[in-house]
Image 1 (tube, rainbow, N blue to C red):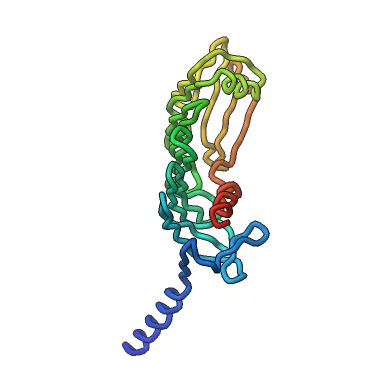
Image 2: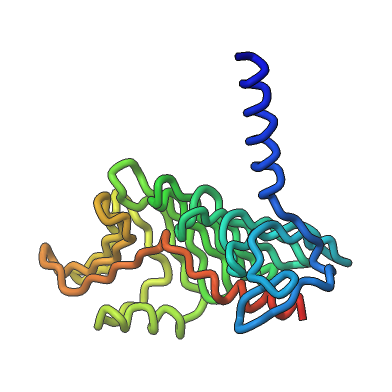
Length: 222
């Protein structure tokens, strides 16, 4: 019985080990076909190591498309995320320049922390166990601020939104609510005039759209 158990462990262990593919980004077998990354002419599933001048890390592909864990640093550029099932899981960091950085943290598809630093605005928000936001959004650009409020059909000269228990005051009886819907897991922005909701926007923020990052990696491969 022990010999049989040992045999099964060795066999299945070998299968699992052999299923893990890993290649270097400079491998000539890596190519791009129809927007997908291939290896030896087949859509690649596995890890691509990117040990390059000025950077290092890796990204993971499934059938030629970004999926799973990515942790890549190239000079000022950072891609760090885990997408095991089409949704972000755990820590997510996207940095395209020193002054353009996004950080998020997810648990079971639910956004818990949200931080952005860009040329137009900064955002630093935590979502409580009830899903309601606490934190600050500061506008650096009047143009961006006006564009942001225009989607709600209002104008405001506030330079900072301070969220407490999911609500930020806009003056003149108006307020903005920011929260994560506990059922849908979507992030919700809602404008209230008094106690009446007048505009509402929902974003499935945990759902990962990796096409832009895929396009960047394809440029690196080319």
